[in-house]
Length: 193
Image (tube, rainbow, N blue to C red; front, side, top):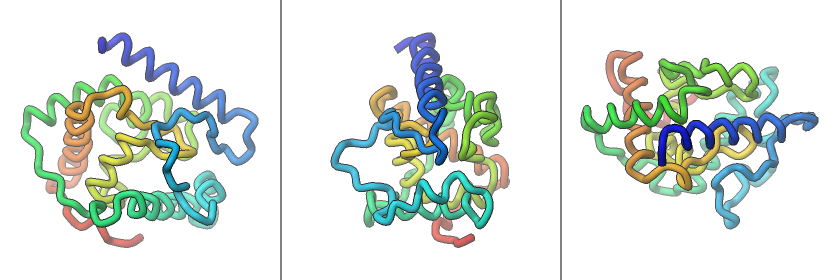
């Protein structure tokens, strides 16, 4: 797949998300863009994810993150906390190239969630450099998000667009942003906010 095709796909996907969100008071995208398979459980059995994710008042952002973490733990089970091996410098560099092509427009050049498309998104893209937020989900949880997206957000799944190797490499780069911002890499995935 060429860089031009990846940019085109990313632009189309972002455009579809923005169009599908217009006129939807809750801001929930029902566009079906996500790579979730048809057998997937809803993110939250009680349906509270959409109720909390767009409201900053009353802890909406943290409620959303808690809902996503609960969904990830339900999807991954015991694998949620599975150790992801450290990456080589070559894998991180390869991941940076993929990140620039498909992630930077939302997550920003330095991973702070401040890319040009971020202004129009609610909830805002993840800040991979924020120590608290970057460690909120386990490494395997973040990898699952890259593959499958998060329903009701602009974060689409990339498993049908990127190779498994590219997904692993982009995650290696995302994880390195956490390490670079804090000076060391954390391994505590279960702290609470």
